[in-house]
Image 1 (cartoon, one colour):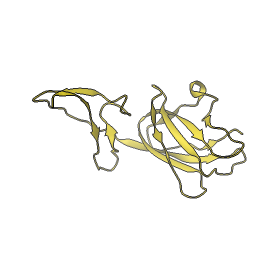
Image 2 (cartoon, one colour):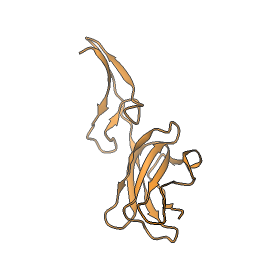
Image 3 (cartoon, helix red, strand yellow):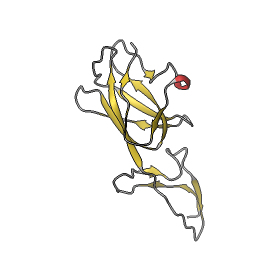
Image 4 (cartoon, helix red, strand yellow):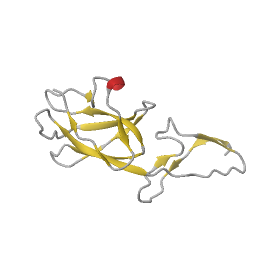
Length: 141
């Protein structure tokens, strides 16, 4: 029916993840108005892999850690990264080119939840993703 809608596209094509049209999240997606004869061209955004290993201050990989990704420009929450199996402490996520900040929940005694590179969102280190990017994280106890 006529109204305003946001589009979620599932292209099923390598290099193009499921995505909101015009934004990284539902909140930032572009709203379109639909009437009896509406046409909307869609250009998909390709992605790159951000991955790495979360480690304790002594270099030991931390199992059970969650890595959450935020857009460094808008502060919008993107989604959590997929964590590696076992005790490897590895994470991976596909993202469009851009700048991101990571929030880590280590689930390990002695290591509080923390932003990568700073004590809060404002001072966290922004990571630029424009190719396959590796960002290892060493946590502060």
